[in-house]
Length: 472
Image (cartoon, rainbow, N blue to C red; front, side, top):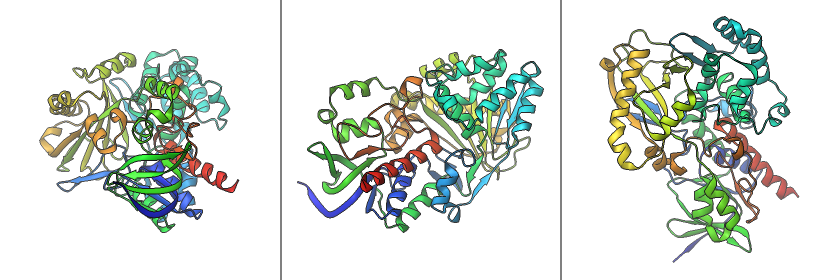
């Protein structure tokens, strides 16, 4: 038996990830009555932190990009986020270490270019042209290559396979795909916003960012309900009319925005009958990104010979690495030879995070492999960059794709929503379904937003779509 809350909202947003919170901020600031319903007991989705034995760990996402070269700076300014949370910038933002090379991406673009040119003098002119292209302010230059992969782009500029391997490796960490499968458009965005304009960290942990937007949202008059799972989106005459909570409470609204994953939104909250066969068939062909394996280490602070702290360090096992082979091994769950990983050491040297792309697999697989993979990765880090690491560990744990699925509900624990193949970009009906009016999606399952800068932008843009409709 259902019960009604008797509250009439202008907008109900399902999910308090960053995209949902940003969308809610713009709508509430404009004077609309907005509810954000979140199934977890805290906001943020992948942008959350947890504390264990005195150590604070970023659960999944741990840094920001695109504040200077993307949309984040403007959106932060719109809501005075800097008054709530301090953002610290580290330079360089990313370092790539291989057996032969060590190259850095920093704030000084000319210095970054020169560092690559010094390591690869035979590609000197091409390196300058490539980085100039990446920083081009004209988006049409990338839209025209919508069908290209990032490998196509690398091949256009370079012949040196070792250089192409180095430039391609961060895509495995930031998109969970090799260059041969990654959209050139998304690959360019990754370099521009995460690599060349990366290195931004909310002081106190990544959770400070969603908490800041949640605080602003409530100040604007928005209502945030945590530990509040949504069971169903209601539709009448092909118009979204409200939601049912898990406890049976019905809440009505003029607009519904879903910030949860696409399959959950369309198959569970709406149902196959409403979405129609054509869209259901399209949904069934969509491929999610790989998930991730994250190693959390707390140390005693007495480590010697540490690499730089506060930056992303990409450690690659060998030069000229075949990234397609690495990807296929990861998809199979074959980690007998860990080809490379992303390493982050906190500025206070207390916390170490290490990231690997990982397949979803079933619970039994990860029950049997979680500890083994964590130990293998820790030994690799010890061998490659931090001697005697194991002697200084005070706390260790790991998150598997099953962990990420459990806490966010993301399909197969996907780290980045849909895999960013060229064929899976900007697909009609994922953002504003044609078969249900007044229903919108926001976040990285829309096929239009990637990473933190992307989902925050989509949150703002979704709010603008609703406000334009209201004005009309």
